[in-house]
Image 1 (cartoon, rainbow, N blue to C red):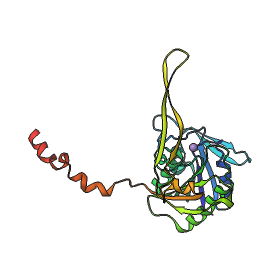
Image 2: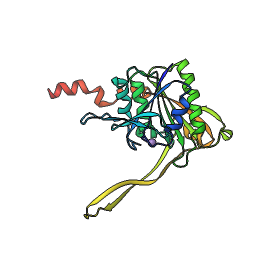
Image 3: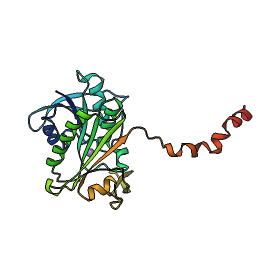
Image 4: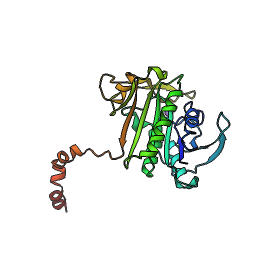
Length: 264
Ligand code: MN
């Protein structure tokens, strides 16, 4: 039986954790290691300067799981570096409360946990539900379980993970599944400045939830807006090959050797 490692960035109380874990029960042997608190938008962290603790806990259905003091990526690193007796066959991160589309993937702890799996050579999925409240994870969990089953048979290219976003609608309203590219998020962050009880300034990055360009056909944002499940293949190699030649033409690159000589 395949072994599946589940993590997330919403922590042990994340509403998408238990539905995912339960749906995956039919696919493989599931181990859950998640942050002990909310760690959304924590990015791809590696805790190096303080110890990590792991605690055995029970999820709401009584099943056993582990929580760690680390970031989502730490949870996966702990598992693959030896906390688990064997390497998992598959890492699934989620299901996140809130879509992870466009540039979100650089902030997302959900994606970071999946990236960590990918870096360790394990096929990985990041899964998110497109709502920030009152999520119904039933369909999303079933879909991710079906995807996981097929992935275990087919495998994935090296250094590629699947970023899955599911609309928050009943199954009968799902239009289908689209393979997408990353869309353009529109962030509406605002810097809030206030005074603390001691009279000192503090800052809070607030503002409205991000929106996005829903009219850009073929993107993850467009797919969700049209009630499609979005699957984006994401590669770890972020090199912009199209710009390599253009950058070679920069004076600082072309003149580097002679500039070094004249300074020496
Ligand atoms: Mn989250």
